[in-house]
Amino acid sequence: MITLEQVKADLRVTHDEDDGLLEILLNGATDEALLYMNRAQLPTVDDVVVGSVYTAVFLLVRGMYDTTDPAQMTAIRQRAEVMLQPYRQDLGL
Image (cartoon, rainbow, N blue to C red; front, side, top):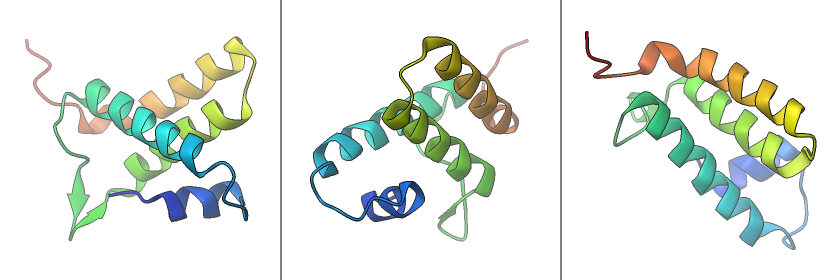
C-alpha cells in the first residue's frame, strides 16, 4: 500500500492541514490506477508496490493536488497510463 506519509514526503508537505484532501486524492489516484489496470490490488514484489505503479499513483496525486489546467492534467494522466500499461490485465482479444 501507498501511505499518506509517503505522499506527503513526495509532495514535500510538512503540515497536517491538507491530510484529509491528500487522503482523498491518494484514494482517487489508487482507484484510477486499479481501474485502468483492471486489477483489485496494486501489483507488488515482496509486498512492495511495483516501482512504476508507485510512481504513476504519485504522479496522479501530484497532478490532482498541484494542477488546475485540464490540458496539463490530461498529459499527466497519459504519462501515468504509460507506466501502468505493462500491468493491465484481462484486456480481451
